[in-house]
Image (cartoon, rainbow, N blue to C red; front, side, top):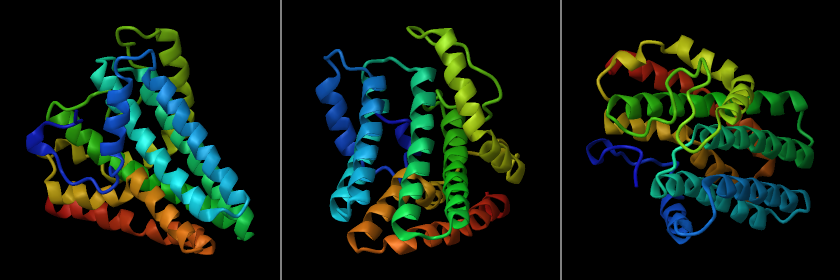
Length: 254
């Protein structure tokens, strides 16, 4: 089940885990497992990858990073299959992602002994890159009656959906807000009029999907396989240059 109507679906380069995630979700749809359980599983998988990185097993770490992406696709799929959309699950997923991203880069810093300042710049870059993709993707979904559990502007806790606690939604929203507000505000400042456009063309969404979390993790995994761990942090600093390109393309041509 997709987040977008068929007419607006595009080649998402960061979503290579969708097929595997859908398979996992279908195996779990008639069980007691919930999307929250699946999100917790991908957190565990991410930390397994970190453990292998710290012990020098880079190829195994790369496998678990990719597996994390596959499982990450499964929680949303399971939510749609069970018809249990959840703001709590949506915020929990995002909180888990940012924590794992920080831990991944912290691990690269540890094993390469590169400057901690560069690591923090790379982390800021990775998160802002992801925000660029998510911002445009959420705008598209909201403009064409797609999945609406993510909002264009997350400025207040949403009303809890059926089956979830308002208290839990409020708690997870506050944590999400602290972790993401800086990136969201920067992106909104850069392109606050994006939501006024017609639905973005497929070529544009495919292009910005280069900034999707799955693609970022794929890059990390490939670099680990080829023992390019020393270049991961510098790469993601440089990769942020395309933020200006993507925002510029949207403003000039769409």
